[in-house]
Length: 178
Image (cartoon, rainbow, N blue to C red):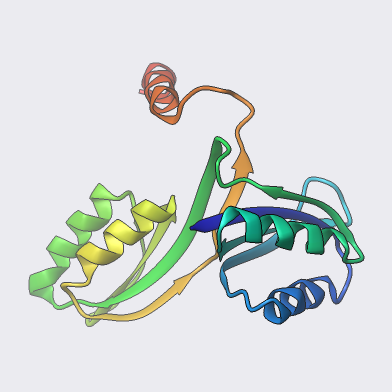
């Protein structure tokens, strides 16, 4: 099973190296990794996705806490959360296919960030399912390059189920912004 961990660390050199070394020594592969400044100066948030059963991931979390500079580790896999990823995707596009690619981009609310006579670059932001879905649709065209960020995640404070929250947010956005 894939687990998502959110780790708060002191922003000092070598922290990420020690974490990745711990994973390597335990034979774990990090599927996704994103690092950036957190809400307080001098603290970074590391979001990582790893494969493993619950018991193994719990052991890994205990090992993480033993490292210097680790402030908090949270397994957010089963918590209500918001997760996003960014993908840049370069596609060969001739004039015949360009309108189909633009239509797919519009459906997924992707942005065209570069265009030439032979290719296009799309920027797609969303949950990992959305990223996977647009990539699958664009596979019918010649994808020449892909760059993806790691998944980032924040735990929701509301206890509203995701389906109800989407409906509420849609109503809010329609009322205030349309």
